[in-house]
Image (tube, rainbow, N blue to C red; front, side, top):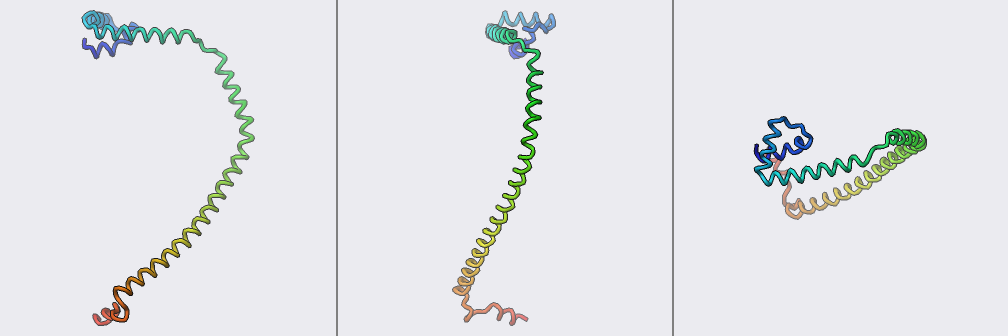
Amino acid sequence: MKCKEINNSFIYAIEKSLSSNEQSAFEKHLISCKSCSKSYQRFRNVYQSINTEVEEFTPNPFLAQKVWEKATANTNSIRTLIVPLQRSAIVSIAAAGVALGIVMGTLLSTSSQSTINTNSEYYLQLAEDYFPSNLYSPYEELENND
């Protein structure tokens, strides 16, 4: 067996779920490979310490039921207080959003109109500077082409 296969089968060897052929190949490899042997020893120590920790703590069989009873009792009492509060909060937030939208729309509308006016005046001035209306009229060319 290769080292990678051995490392992948550490847990199976500890839990004794390897077949007899796999177990003998596993043991032969550990005897011949010091690196895998050290890794297996460390892995087995960690596994045993975890199992020791788990076995020390036994769950209380009544704990889950007590927690469930308290959770259901508290949610029923809190739910009656929160539902009217939630509805009023939702309505308030919606009204504030509509009011904010109206105010922002009004401000942006007046702001964009003043910008449009400023821009159009600027462009008219530029047109007058580069193409004076007393010297050049684009409409005269259109009339002559007909």
